[in-house]
Image (tube, rainbow, N blue to C red):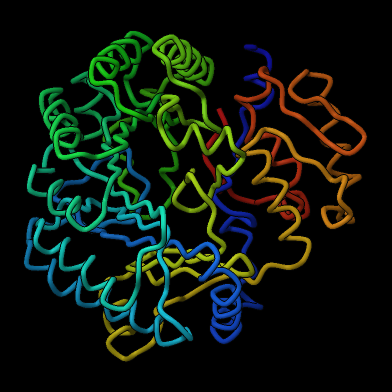
Length: 453
């Protein structure tokens, strides 16, 4: 395994989309065509499966130095009401494009720190969304909670408007690691918010743990998972730390590259964590996720409904996902569009009745076919081209790239299908990269992605 780690530990995407953002063709993108694909997708899917809504709430009171997300650091809470007002204005701009009320299947509040906002303001936000929308049957609403500032009032307020799933960012319980990433939170805080959510009636409680953090050791991983097992969350995200210090504004500072575990140490951390989680009754779901058999993420994997988008893994698929708020990305299946990242510019555009996108990509026929293959691999660890509509001209070159992975026993190649082996699952990003024809047609001159291991 050590030789394989050295061989395959290269920069690569996490494939929450295909094409990946650095390979969007922004020159051929237009807001007019984006709106056209948006309306097409809405007409095709709203009444049958509903839509997904992601709302980015960017404010944090302090900077976590492991974070690569878009955020604004402030302790001023007078920013809450104006931001919510702008988000609701943006939502109405979308609703004006549609012929009927949107039916929302999935809604997720991400950040930043959603629980930076007061319970009352979060309730106002959700009630404002549903003044012009309806909930679908079997809807799933979720939010990201910070254990240090999520109150019982937050949990109750969001439960009252339909939320049944919450995920808490834990990262690691070791104090040295917490200090390095500027995220100090006692176990007692995590215990409180987990138990409060259960008391109120939340059906799925998730914890996010990261391996490969600065100063993190194998013993730290064992300790964190042992403490996590005591709280028995329904699902876990067990992520590899993505070290991308060259990205503007990501806050990854305060430690050196030498403070990070080596690729081999990271893989040991993952394998140890996986073994402990499996022993505790968790099932591996796609890449970096684990769930109890009672959780919806596991049942969706078993039924073949697991999906992956900009929100990560989701228990069901919607064709259309609209992103609201600064930096959010929308996905109509036929195209992607990203909002501006500057808060003042975002507010100015929305106040002038302009949907605040600044870049995007219109998917080609080839893009959509490859996207389906990558989704199959990410969600089911296999894909097939037995149907002619999943053939594409570059398939022979993809198979050539996969040949060495077959020799390394990472995959099994059949006449019209490939399957990822157990040995190959830790290298799923590398396997997907073989399908990424844009990446191979134009190799990046500068580093764009985190390492795959």
